[in-house]
Each structure stands twice: as C-alpha cells, then as structure tokens.
Image (cartoon, rainbow, N blue to C red):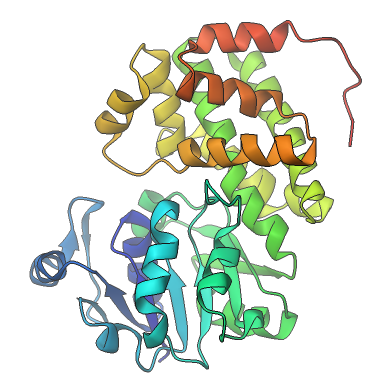
Length: 335
C-alpha cells in the first residue's frame, strides 16, 4: 500500500483521494482549515464538492501536515491555480525529499505566465525538479467519483519516474499513459478551459453544432500554436491532455468552464456567473495569462482574445462571435 498525500479538499482532490483509496492505497487529504478537516472526517463524504460518494476506509482528511505528508511516496497538488504558490510555500518543508510530486491543477499563473509545475519548482528550489510532474486528461470528477472509466496522462522530465507514477495511479477504471512532454501535457489541460467557456457561449446562444465544431477545432489549433511556441511537442495536443480533455470539457454539462460560458451567454456578468457556479472555473484566470503570453510571444489567438473580451472587457458573447466570423480570411493551417 502506497501512501499518497493530497493537497486540497475540492472536487478533484476528493475524487482522486476516493479513486486511489479504492485502488488499495492510503490517501490523506490535507486541509489548511481545521474546521473543514473535522467536518469531512466526521461526515465521511464531501457533500459540497462530491455529493453522495462516501470515503473509503483508507482515506482520511487532516489539517496536520505531518500526518498528511510524512511517509508519502507521492504528493499530489490539487488546489486552485491562484493558490498554488502560497500553498507550496506553506507546506514545502513537510514534503519528503524522496517523494514524487504530481500537480493535478490545470492553470497558468496570471502575473508570471508560469505553468503550475514551474511555480512548484520555483517555490521548492532545493527539491529535485525531475521529481515534479503533472497529471492531465479528460477527467470530469463527478464521473470518476462514481466509478466510471477514465484515462489520463502523467508527465515527468524523466521517463523512469513517469513510469513509477503511472503504475501507482493506474487501475481497472483509471488508465494512465505517460509522457516526458511536461510543457505540452500541462498547457493542454490549462488552455482548453478557455475554449470550453466559448463552447458554453455557443450552446447558450443556440448557435448550433456547426458553429461549435468550428470553434472547438480552431481553439485546438491556437492552443497548439501557443504550446509549441512555449516549447511543447505538437503531437501532445492530439493526445488525452489536448484533444481528449478539450472534447470532454467542451461537450459535457459537468464541465465548470462550459457552464460558466452558458451562464455568460444568458446575460450574467462574470461575478454573478461565478457565484452561481459555486466552484472554481480555471478558464477565467487562464484566459488572462494566455492573452499576456500570446502578446509576449507574438502568437495570434483570436478565440482567446474573444473570450477575454467577454470575461473582462464587457463584450457580449454574440458580439465576440460575430467579430470572430468577420476576421480577415486566411489559410486554415498556420504554425
């Protein structure tokens, strides 16, 4: 039995804890709130984020860093992207030096434009960077929590470490593939949330399947362009963490970012739509980071710009989509 420490108590953190405990591992979720840890420990269910799914016996929740991380062979970071740096800064001394660290948060830091694994490495300067990797793929937490089959990709700078973590995380309902393209796997998971918000615009406005198919396809194209400019491999974006995650997120009502887009299409402003959602939607801050990165790298990202205009500049979804349709005609493929 492997002990796995999980930083976070949200939907994805709780789901991973449940999934891996069912597989036979001991999972310990760390909460920085003592009252929240006591609440979850007593209830043995996270009704706020994963309602109706009871915790396995080998899963516990604790506010103690020592109990959560000491002895953990694998540490998973599963908190909102805007809190990753602060959380790592607060817990880094408790992470065992021989543990592998997997970031399952899908986002980009707004101010720095850094990927989450880069943020973690920066806050843990004495930690071996080859032991820091990422997990990403088409993983809608509510489906996985109730035992439905899913797949994902784990990426580390060294294949030998990726293989160890792949073996640990894999089960008969969660098949893990591995990669050494940490940049590509991480960016695919983060950037697809921008496109998912736009997919929600389209469905919310009733614009039809043709418009949505075009939007998602062109979205994948510009995600790939930015990713390659940042050092990722093109083929990664055709895999689970790219196309796979994009499809799941853009076509499922379980997707938070998709639901955010639907809410905005109904006339709500961003603050109200997020309040109604009641959960983190990583696509909003990621849009801010992506616009800045695209400008710095000279990458044209019209879909990302359109999403940004709706989220932060007061444009309506219909106006943003009309502007996209009126752009200068150009070749389909440009890298």
